[in-house]
Length: 430
Image 1: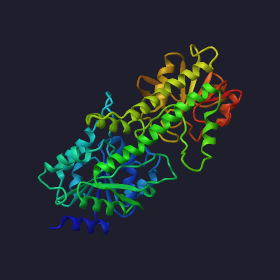
Image 2: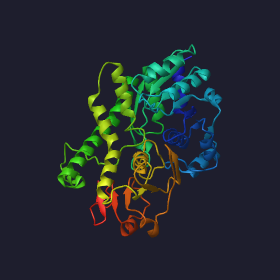
Image 3: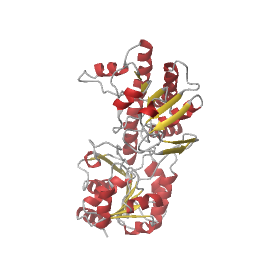
Image 4: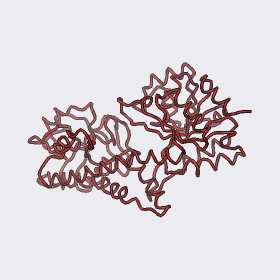
């Protein structure tokens, strides 16, 4: 039997069943996108709380509204489940599991490996397996493929394996997933072709590359590009402060050049998975090949120094110093309007300041913090509360915040996100 042609026909007729493993920021939007296009999608996740929220129409990802999920469940085109046996029913399996860093800053691909082992138990002829989780180059070939071929089946003949990096940007309404071009690199040419046909059912532009390694490295280049440029502007921020000029004005001036410049902006540090974590996958792999990624390592150091620099600036702004001062952190998520604390610089800033001052925070997306030894509840932004603090430190510039009220009642504001666009008598910017 020609399993390639059979699966190709199933996908083109939208008869192929899909199983997405991991219903986080990548997996859930992908599941919804394909279910909306008429495919039947299993959403496989071992997080019972997450599954319960989906079934009860409770939001946990801002980019996907609960009503949309409920509608798809009711139409019987999306089925969230913790039962791994649904894998044997799937024609296309997409792996969207976490790839964190260990404490020693080496890649942790245990979730990917476990997903591959689980798929292997149910692997059958005529299935397309796609890894979307970001990892170091060769993960698809050296971690996933060896597990799958233990089944006795052959890639390119019996089943097909491909890497296609996720490019989700949480909270970005200008660039929805179906408008972002998809990279595809298969172990075999047949895998590449099948993945191209599959993704083209929901995404407008598909770009083919020669191997999974090219696709894996391309993803890391994208994120390392941002890491390096943010590090550069962070260093310029420190220099601008020494020069007594505004880095924000410098950037606005530089971006009037119509070529050869792309604006990047400073902040209190970097968060999420893509920028602080992904380039370290590349650095780790390079070291195993006897190559040192000097620029990547320096950029990582520069960006991880920013929380310390923010604390130093706050200390310099407070006339009595931070000792016995009261400081309010405004916004603790790593990104504007996104309910996600991964690698958030706010956490490190709070930890550092708590050793020197009384610290509270306010963030409508995070009602309480119980992480990294921090145990706090979000406070309300009222005139009475604002007047209590010696400094309001803006870390995350959420949209639904009354910044005019804060400016009116706060004694001192240190704005790391350029919310106010210029300095005022009680406002200082990064």
